Length: 76
Image (cartoon, rainbow, N blue to C red; front, side, top):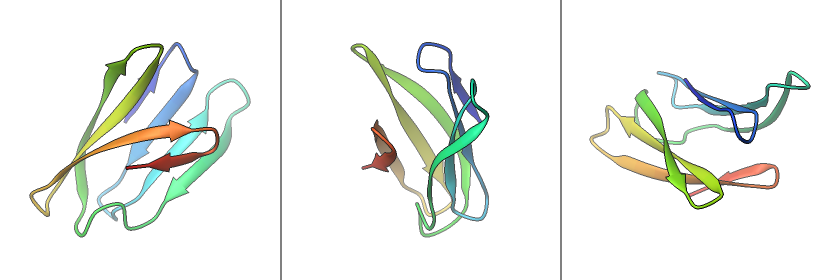
């Protein structure tokens, strides 16, 4: 899990290859990416990116991916 205080977003990554993004103020799910990696995600961290933050994920498939939250979706 990773929490971004500035944007009020909680990023949850799972061993079932999913990433979910929640709004911490309204407690609603903003988006979800199924099969974000070929194998489970075991770590994630926020990476400062100007006024925003990107999400870096590490997977058991031996890859790292950098994700950007645009409006209501995550993109690589």
